[in-house]
Amino acid sequence: MPPARSHTGPAALFAAICALAFGLAAFLYGARLEATLAQVEASRVRFTLGDLRTDFEKSLDRGFAIGQLANAQAALEAEARQDSDVLSLTVLDENGRRVFHAGENVPVPVPAQDGVRRTSDAITASTTLSYNYGVPAGTLLIRYSHRPHDEIMAALALRLALAALAATAISTLAFVAGLRKLERRRRAVGLQVENALGAARIPPATEEELAQLVDKVNQTAATALVELTAARHAVSGSGAGR
Image (cartoon, rainbow, N blue to C red; front, side, top):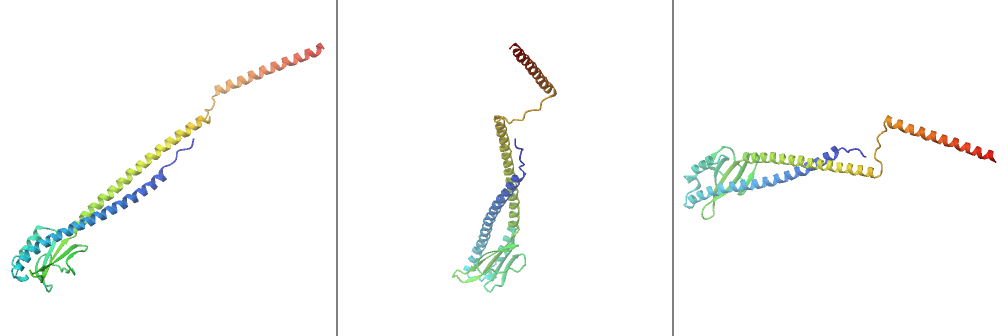
C-alpha cells in the first residue's frame, strides 16, 4: 500500500490563492465603501452650505450688501459650535476679501468653481452667494476635518483584513480536511485491491510453525525412503524368479 502523502505543499498553495482572492475582494469592497462615504460627506457639506446660503441670500434680497449681513457672523459661529468636524466657515466678498469668518484662522484656497475638493487634512467646499437678480455677491467657504473619514476607513480596513484572514483560514482548514478524507479513501481502496489480488502481506512464521514444518518434511522424506526400498526389493525378487 502506498505511503500517506504530505498535505503541507497543497495546503500552502491553496492558502496563498485564498489570501490573494479574499484580499483583492476586501480591497475592492473597501474602495467601493470609501467612494460611498465620500458621496455621503459631499452631500453633508452641500447641505450645510445650502442651508447657510439660503439664510444669507434672504438678507441680500432685501438690498443689504454682503458686508452688512448682521446675522452672518453669529450664524457661522453657531454652525461651527454645532458641528465639531467643521474646521472653519468663511464668507468672501465679490473681490475675494474675507468678510466673516469662524473657526481656524488659516488661509483657505478658493476653489475655481462651486464644488468639493479634498486634501489630506480637510474637505473644502464653496458656493456662490448671489443677489436676487443673479449678480454674484460673494462666496461661502466651509472646511470639514478629514479625521472622521480617516478613522472610519481605518476601522473598516481592519475589519476587512480580519474577515479576509478568517475566510482564508476557514477555507484552508476545509481544504485540508477534504484532502485527508480523500487520502483515507484512497488508502482503503488500495488495501481492498491488494487483498483482492492476494498481495496482502503474510505474517512471518513462528518457531513452532517452523518446527512442525520440518517434522512434516522429515516424515515425508522417511516415508518416501521406505517406499523406495520396498520397490527395490520387489524388483530384485521378480528378477530372481525368472
